Length: 69
Image (cartoon, rainbow, N blue to C red):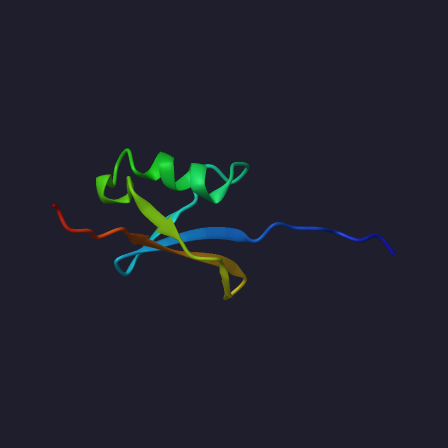
């Protein structure tokens, strides 16, 4: 019996909004870097480990909030 391996679709979730993976063959960090061109708040974001959800891998992306000074 042949075995078929499929990669689940990756979704990046930021502030309650889901973004499709712009670069499935790249690392999650690189995909978020590409997304940051259209969503500037992702520039310094951190990525949580993926969680399976409805046959997809969902990465929660959080922006780093800091203080000046």
